[in-house]
Length: 194
Length: 189
Image (cartoon, rainbow over all chains, first blue to last red; front, top):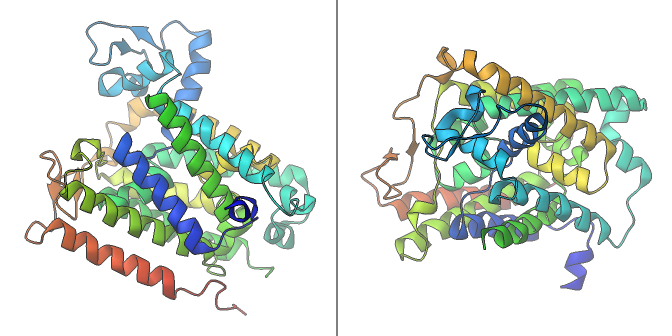
């Protein structure tokens, strides 16, 4: 057990079992795993500090909250409710994931290679070692990923993993759309390097 | 109670993503350029096992179908998936793995998450306009699954076959693919 906790990278069977257990526990005990919504909630929490109309108590709304923003107001004020009460399942789940990543990296027999932490090797082979360039590209990538995920109503967690686990049509459609674009772009952008 | 579960399952999921290599953009990019299928094998196995267990447990009455949450299928799911796919390939992170990698101390992931917050904000502001376009046109019945879930609001696409059989076949295909896919692939020229 100790060995497994300290391994730098798990065998795919161990990884598959652990991921499968996470999906199953989540749906059995609470609800399917999802991540991308929480980016909206975080934005909303910050926005709420500067505006009094983002998450407003509203007896007439199904969830008890409404918002001047149509997206945060939808589904009976579900997002507005979570913005007003950040200590809710979905938001804490994502914070715990962050802590899980921290622990996973700390419990490691071999310390991480400094180079590997700054840049993926395949990135350097194609784009060199400029930090500005890498950070600019991950920022842009992040903006596309979250805009796309919110348009789709879910991300790799909610659609691809939880969705396909439930055999949902939307999960399959999302996955097809994602790989149809991601594979050619990756093949083109990262032509060089092993 | 829910908060304790959020902490426990979130930790497990984040830890697992980190340890399986999903939070390492090199692994993601190598999967997307069809060089290294380690991660895809793990994910296929994870989905196959959890899907089969879920439907068996629901059948036995040990998991309530009310816990399911099937998302609607609409045009934006495919187009949003494509936009997500583009960013995924560029950065080598998706929302969950970006968060985990930031927790693991990666600075490029921090910029990914900040970019993600910007992208989510742009969508939040654009929603009122986008909502009225074809992007939100439903596909088929909207909320639909291949296998019957027993939940009334969800349409079943393969309704003549028992759910456990549908899921059993899908799970077998996924697990077989996970087993047969080469870990390190086909070296492109």
